[in-house]
Length: 107
Image (cartoon, rainbow, N blue to C red):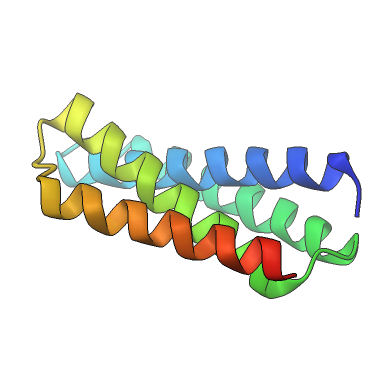
């Protein structure tokens, strides 16, 4: 596994979060955002497949993907959509990130 795998995983995460944010925009009434949803998820899952083909373990890749995606989505939704982010939610995010770090170091 190389640094390229981690870069591709990071791009996949950004695309997945972008697709999710576009999905939120669709729910606000703009149908043109469906293109962003489709493109974001298509690129994200394609790159995740490439990362897995390069040898990254599924548990590690998906753990990093899930934790980073949840954290970024929560922060973006707070900043751009004024959705709540309480201290309990922040604690939950910290626990998720901590769990993924344990999985990564255990691998």
